[in-house]
Image (cartoon, rainbow, N blue to C red):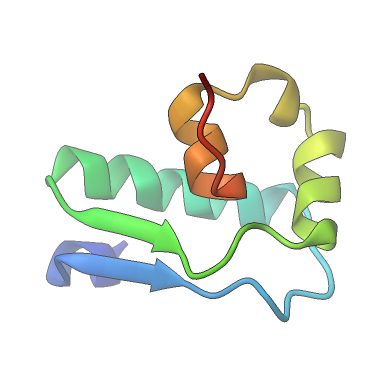
Length: 79
């Protein structure tokens, strides 16, 4: 989380992610919370790829996504 603390804008590139597990999701969610608490910007360079989406689905995150989660992970607006 030091990187998040020391930078105002953070972009995470998961496009070439070929393997994902719950630890990946937890790490990114922790970084999001830290960035939010410090009024910093964090985003994915592209929507989560199919591997990351499958990890989100398996871990149950997709079932409880908020509008902000959908925008962050999938780059979609929820109306």
